[in-house]
Image 1: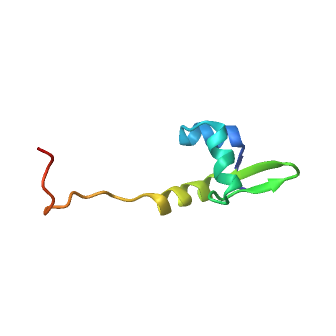
Image 2: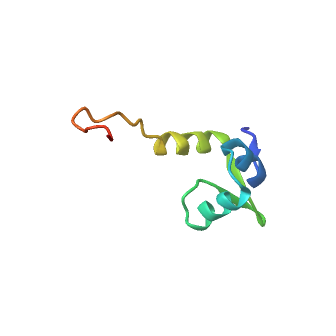
Length: 67
């Protein structure tokens, strides 16, 4: 069975404050489930969520640089 992560572990993994994790949870923006009264996360789902949000930014060749 895959290891589960706590809010603090996810915050450390994502390098954000734990309040950021709670804010994302409150808005249903992050995959998690409740086990009793605490949130738990599967690392594989967090990684997939990150991948779904990841955008590769490529420079627009038609855009002029700031002068």
